[in-house]
Image (cartoon, rainbow, N blue to C red):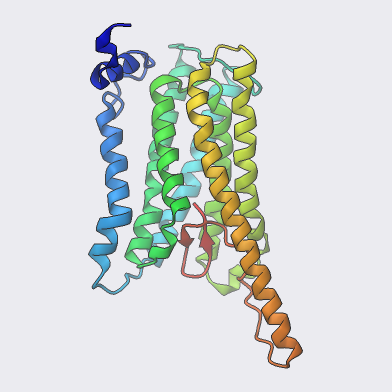
Length: 302
């Protein structure tokens, strides 16, 4: 092996030479510096600058902004789910089981890449979750799960846009966008207040849906490792551990939330026996996301 290849700069150049020729010159994909600055700035804002900036300030009231943001997320995810599904499975005949890279320049392939690129920016917009928590001084909601999940999603999206935007990962993108539609629909409805929240009994199932999503994505990503359909396994070797990490954090959160709820129920039952039962909170089901509250009452995980 050439000794130059052992140098970090040379290794990066070698890796970047393997990029998808269709996307390698797109803005923000030309240089890994862009993603490094983006994610570094996000982490600095979430864990350092944001809390220090708000230290001596009163929490901001951002309910209307959160409602508008949640509605935007629903509409954007519906739009890109349709665009991505149409230009892959519907019009281009993609296989939902095992699909290799096409490197095609036909109109559907290029439209698919364009939709995926802008969908990546919708996932970057998820950082607004964190910004809202900073503005509301809900720093406890900016958990390891919250920060790691947002960071990994954006990094993985950038990586796939660089090296394998179409192919096997399209199935996962469609599942992910569908889950976001359900989640942000709930957050928007929860912002409408108690008159609507009483009908949101299904929120307890949303964390389970998140966990199920990651299990499905891992299983689906394993297929090209054992079945040769033209998708580079190396990309999946990098991506699967990231999904496993997020899945582990979600499961840990779910278990902790379940145990907390169980302990609270036991305490309430004991008080009831002693004749001092407190009123049950209709919104005290399992938190949806470890990243906090959509409107000060409904909790989120992502």
